[in-house]
Length: 262
Ligand SMILES: C[S@@+](CC[C@H](N)C(=O)[O-])C[C@H]1O[C@@H](n2cnc3c(N)ncnc32)[C@H](O)[C@@H]1O
Image (cartoon, rainbow, N blue to C red; front, side, top):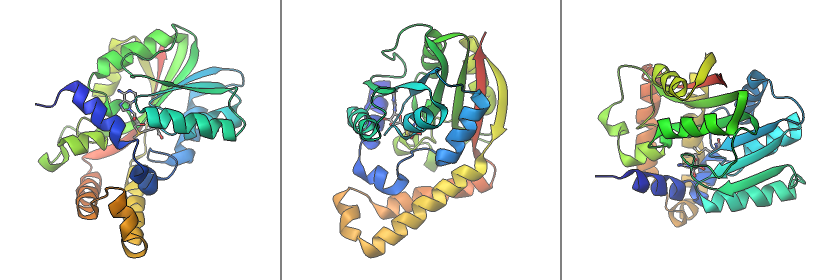
């Protein structure tokens, strides 16, 4: 049986790999910078506010929010490699004084109580084994009236094909994705009332197509690079084909959710 700890380690390890950056680019979520801007706009971020980025990955979102919305950002990620990368990239961008990254678990983030005006969590809640614990932590670090902005993989009541429920699929944000109602229920259980929901399924499909295109191009131009980075093209392409099929069949989507601490 796979333990929650094993899932977390596997996830942090996977997203530390250069191969992921090779296939996903700088932003590890569907919709990239455009959807991050949509999230920030919908959250109503204002200059000077404090924002937490839970599962901040390589830090592209934190840099974007600090430079375009003039906020300060504290990112937390379970991958020490990503925390390092993110900290270096922020320093290089001249944002080192407004963007900070911490190594830690979303289910117990090393951040103080009630100081954040807003929190973002992009394409990551789906990977946390204890989503209720993570939501409780979101509520703990937000001030009253503070807002959570989530974008995440969502499923419908039809559920997933069995091939998309493996550990690899879990780490790839699919296997433990929930319905929109599940997510809003989890948030409500932590005192976070949902204010807004919108669908971005097209962004998920576009991301999958982009991964396929990058992989196919690299297979021709740099097969050794893929092998050196531990990428098994057939396995990745089999997953992306299944996922694309499930999206087109309406079984998987990508959803933006805004909730407020009441
Ligand atoms: C799909 S990536 C998204 C990264 C970032 N939010 C973005 O959109 O670019 C998922 C991230 O979650 C991190 N992660 C997974 N489980 C975590 C946990 N329990 N606590 C904190 N970070 C976690 C991984 O290390 C990875 O950086």
